[in-house]
Amino acid sequence: MGLFGSKSKKLSAAKKLEGAVQFPGDKSISHRYAILAAIAEGPSEIHFFSSSVDCQSTLDCLKPLGVKIERQGNVVKVAGGGLEGLRAPSGPLDAGNSGSTMRMLAGVLAGQPFRSVLVGDSSLSRRPMKRVADPLTLMGARIRTAEGGRPPLEITGGNLTPIRYEMPVASAQVKSAILLAGLFAEGETQVVEKHPTRDHTEIALERMGADIGCHQHTIAVRGRARLEGQKLHVPGDISSAAFFIAAGLIVPNSDLVLHNVGLNPTRSACLDVLVPMGGRVKVVNLEMLNGELLGDLHVESSQLAGGEIPEELVPGLIDELPVLSVLGTQTEQGLSFRGASELRVKESDRLAAVAENLRRMGAEVEEFPDGLGVAGRQKLRGAEIDPHSDHRIAMAFAIAGLVAEGTTVIKDSSCVEISFPDFFATLARVAG
Ligand code: S3P
Image (cartoon, rainbow, N blue to C red; front, side, top):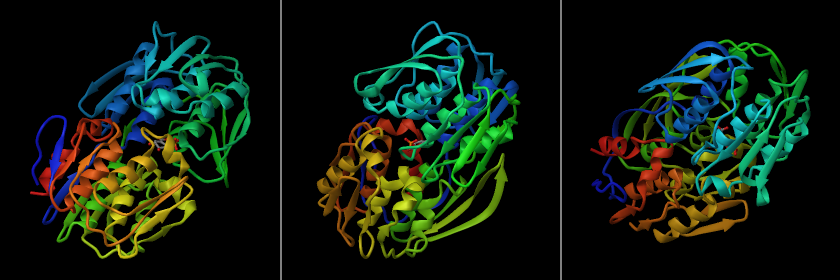
């Protein structure tokens, strides 16, 4: 496999993948630990903090709010000032490309007795924020958005009242925003989820001493509880590992060991799909860190049956669907999924981007309003891939390049830095 250039990356078919891989700290968990540490009392020390640009955006938004943060590599020290410790920023807070930063910080800012403005890059500026503005407005915050409920978000917060909110869309970011705002409301805030989404906020809040409980589909948090600063360790990001799980399964003769991968059951649905299809993935060395499950994965090339991904699993593998679609082309029966219209409002329209780029590689793919269907046993042809500035599209098609005939060129490949800056170097290493 050859790689060159700072912008485009070239890939060709890999004979095998082998070796051990360590992933950046989980992006979702890193955002949450940083935000919670900022409103906790006393110092927190976060180890294996994500190397992603997105998580740096969260730190960069917290600093102008008066939070003292020191970063040395993947160790981040945060001096928490408690629930009342934030101060009005002197200018807009730039969430960059990060939906998690904008939506979750909106929850905290809704509880502040000052005005703040959250802005983002051109991709984030197209993403829906009404879903977060609506419940926070019900709690008493004043929120202005641009036309169509898009960023920037102008938030004037304070004096929140608790609500019981039934989530109209499955979104852990929105759920987290409401729970974070609930910390600033007098009384119990409840969020009801039809389909469970990642529960890292709930786990971290409990660890830090919040009064939080979950019963069936309802999560309830009491406001005004004191959070305590902690020493925290972030597990490896399963959404980054997913590219190597898929690659290890579909590239012949592969044998990969993926270390310290976060295996929180609300995040690991890709394994629940791949293993029953014949994917040889063994989980070893399971342990719990700060209430989060993690372990090592041993992945070997496999004959995969393919099939239909049940709709109820979709929230638990929403970020993995682009690479699973690529993998689907190498299965016996192909792969399909529905109930994933949320993919249309991620960093790009991921259903359209996957369909477009698979077609560029000569694949047969059907695009539904809320899903995709790819035929199995397909020969992919190397092609020029347009990731639409979306990190997960760039990485999914780099994996496609490893099983394609000829050369695959990923344009504007630096977008992988959003979640996994060492992605191409790591791939080059295991591909020899
Ligand atoms: C995330 C939740 C998901 C996911 C995103 C990270 C989180 O988004 O796609 O990458 O950290 O809570 P939604 O909340 O929009 O589903």
